[in-house]
Each structure stands twice: as structure tokens, then as C-alpha cells.
Image 1 (cartoon, rainbow, N blue to C red):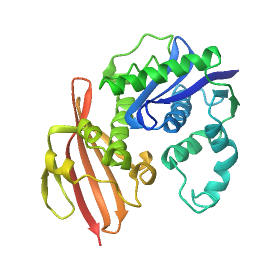
Image 2 (cartoon, rainbow, N blue to C red; image 1 turned 180 degrees about the vertical axis):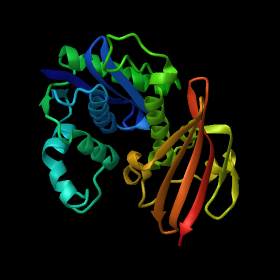
Image 3 (cartoon, rainbow, N blue to C red; image 1 turned 90 degrees about the horizontal axis):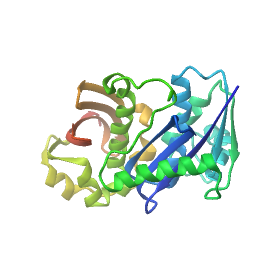
Amino acid sequence: MTITAAADGSALGNPGPAGWAWYIDDDTWRAGGWPHGTNNMGELKAVLDLLESTADAGRTDEDLLVLCDSQYVINSVTKWMPGWKKKGWKKRDGKPVLNVDLMKAIDAAMQGRRVRFEWVKGHAGHPMNEAADQRANAAATAFQKKQAPQEGPGFDGTSSPAPAAATGVASTADAVVDRELALLSDAVRGDRELASRLLHEGMTEISATGQRYSRDDVLDALSPLVGFDAVDEVCAADITSSQIAPDVFLLTYTTSGVAGTVARSSLWVREGEQWTLRHHQATPTER
């Protein structure tokens, strides 16, 4: 049996509020996004979540056909990825591969599976592509309006949904990690308004030098990280997430740069439907 699904991404402004979605039928689809991202990020995330969702459902032994209107995604996965891996995830010109965190995760998720990609023309009336596009755009629009997007029923859409506490932890953790990566990206660090949406009103930070910062201090100090964009350099797989209370997630990870290696921890809290960063601490581990 072959599972056939359409995957699509959307970004309002590109970059801007971004969404992703995959669609099999009206009972089997999923969507999500970020406050700030690109269309290519959405396209890749849709494919990754489709791979992960079918794996979680125990369907890795079935063929998977992905309908995609992005030549970038298809070429990345089917043509360019083997060469990038041999070069240490570098392009032919020696520059780092863009969206490498998503690329690596897709590569890992495809191992041992029979996955094919088929290009379809976007916005041309293909029913499944249109359905995925509508859901991805709706997710991007929700983030633009500072609302939670409709996530959909997931892969097993025919079963009665379990309580959110039982089914939502993994997807919620992914959403919190996405916000951490967005906050670390040059695009958000260079836009005070976008960054402010991710910070709790009472946010505090302890820097690697031991200095304490308030929310306003952090916003005043934010600037693009020259030569280091965490969305590309810090893989989502490298971030450990722990739900320590119903509305609290702790993220931990390590970064390396000119200042040395730093262990980082971020405390994210939910108020209503919004997750914001309440506290961040950076601890140097070596110089």
C-alpha cells in the first residue's frame, strides 16, 4: 500500500510569519508554523512532520509518495543531499547548507524507508496540493495575528482524539523549540517587534559573564549574530526539551563561538495559547 500526501509551506513576506502543512484527506492532515520563517523552511518542515507522523503511526513499512510543488525540496532531498553530506553539510562553494537542521532531520527520518517525491504545479487546482497550501497559509496567517494555528487531526484522523495532555506533548515541544530557534535567528534578532513577541513581559537573562538582563535590556542588546545564525547552526535535534509543568518547558543545548563553549537553558511558559521565553541562562563551560 502507498500513502500519498501533499506537503506545502507558506510565508507571508518570505521571510515573515510562516506555516507548513501536509494533507492526505480531510480527516488526516497536520499544520504548524513559526512567528518568523521562510517559505522553504515551511516546505521542508511539512515533509519532515509527514515522515515523523507516519513513523509514529507505525507505517514505516509502507511506501510514501510526497506530492510537492517545491523543486527546492525535491532537488535537495533527491539530488543534492548525498553530496552535502560528503562535504560535511557544505555546498559546492564551501558555504553551509541553508536550513541544515531540517535537512539533517529529514535525512535521518528517511533512513530505511521507501519514499518518493512527485512534483505538482502549485496553485493549479490540484486538490491535495490546494488543501495543503490552504492549511499552510492559514497557519502563517494565525501567527501573523498572534494566534495559535489549527494543528489538524494528525495521521490517525479516524480515531477519537485523546486529551491534549496525552497527545500534545511532542507537538508542543516542537513548537517551543521552533520559537527558540526563531529567537536565535538573525531575522528575528534584527527585528525588535518580532523578538518582543517571543519574550515574556517579566523575562530575565543571566549572560555568560554573569550579568543580569531585563526584558528591555535584552531587546536593546539584540542584534544579528555576524557569521552565526542559530537556525542554521543549532539543530533542533541538539536541543533537549523537558516539560516540567503543564505550561512550562525547559530547553537545554550548547553553542560554540569566539567566546568559547556555552551551555544554555531556556524556560518557556504558556499564557493562554502563547508560549514566551521567561528566563534564559548562559553558562560558559570552557574558554
